[in-house]
Image (cartoon, rainbow, N blue to C red; front, top):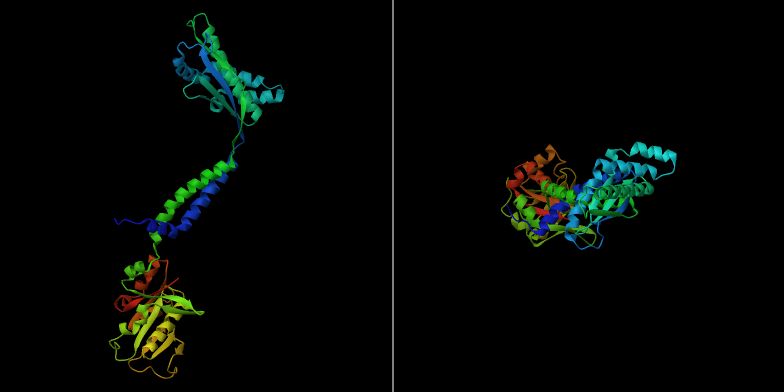
Length: 377
């Protein structure tokens, strides 16, 4: 396995950017859907302090209180505490209709699902949290659970059979925590982050599959032919620049393959106008070296450089054919490729490897007589 540089990894992700966009959109859309399906929920907290029955500040056995507080916190789901919590929760409202609704709602299962206890780190302080559909209901539920828990523990500690010097739990009034859900900003942030993480992986995998070629060296390696030049605009006209493209006549030296003019087919994955511009530049490069060349576009209409259309190109001259792009020509391009003595490929930087391989798929003749490649932006 070859090692990749950071730039190559980034190029792979860039090639797969549609996957990144789709994943982020799905993450944000999923967060919006989840937010829309959530019921409104509010929270409240009742604070309990577990201490020795001798007094809150008694230092004796104080190091054991945090462990005892954990034990007290677990008692919130026991049957006596749950039952008293339900009773106090119903009695907390003076509205008969609301009391009836709370009586139907406050089952043992519902209370266990909506009441949570936690201990403050390394202390004997308990936080009893309750959640409900309104802030008032949440405060009533948290305070009912806190008072019920402290009441049960204090009652057991004060029983005649209890161990002398037992525990005492002090409960403080509940305070509201505000709205717990839905929280659109939090959900959107989580959804976007999940989408980005999944999108980066999907973009990388998609980039590996698409594998666009952004550097001339990559195109040379794929086609096993040199990049001769680059198509640029000079004075409003597209032309090919590059020292190797200027030496094109030397690459064509050696005479025609069939005793007539040499035929050069210009095709590739580039746009038709780019192919025609490269073909015109090829004619100009050949004429600059004293050769005679004629441009034929798409194997049909012809454009004269020196000689008129009805004048045959002399032996030793050149016919430059501006063919159609690979993939859109069908059998016509295959015929042109078979008749051509040489082929010049036009492709854009960023072309996918799969698309560039269509050049070879158009006929093995490309591999035998491929002069090189001209790249476009």
